[in-house]
Length: 279
Image 1 (tube, helix red, strand yellow):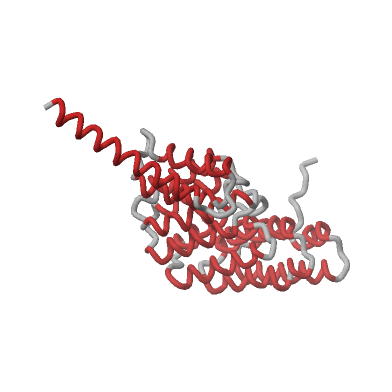
Image 2 (spheres, rainbow, N blue to C red):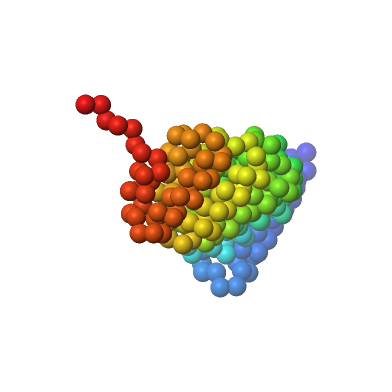
């Protein structure tokens, strides 16, 4: 019996060692990777197979191989956090999809995106009730646009708000796609969301909302209107006049004053005078 047990133990040890050596060989076979980078990738694989997650060896190895291509720029800890987020929140995703989003999230980190923002995007979209096609669209779009200067969170919140207002399916994807195009041009997603919040307060029309925002960017911001100033001005004008028609008219007047040479803040005060101070 002892001999049988010893043989079984030896067989298991040999099998385990074979898996480890195979994994190391795969990690070591990546062209251009240094010894230090391979060590980081092996460390990530080991961490994902630890007590907290206990990922299968093939799953952990897949993540490690994706990470290895970027190991020279990234510490193992943030990569571990993102991988674990996808292994928990994204457990319903296919492994190929998890790896694609993992790669996109790592690239976003390299561009300077905040780790917390990426975790929020991964978790909220993976656990959302969006249909699979929309989940894929939002995850890929938000991660691919996330940078040091463009957080994915405002667009994530914008997507939730337009959904609450009745925008779904292709129309929702088109709207968010338009917003991301503006982000790709260098616009701040927080201002897009702020302006949407203001216009949605005065108009339930989804067509008007989008047309108004597009006009703000094409007729205003791209021609030199300050984005933050316009976002604040639209919020202020919307609260003062409280109708879609008046908001649209007053923003047109604001543009005419500004492009006619009036300083922007002065033009805003003409369109929507601030409340008088109490004596």
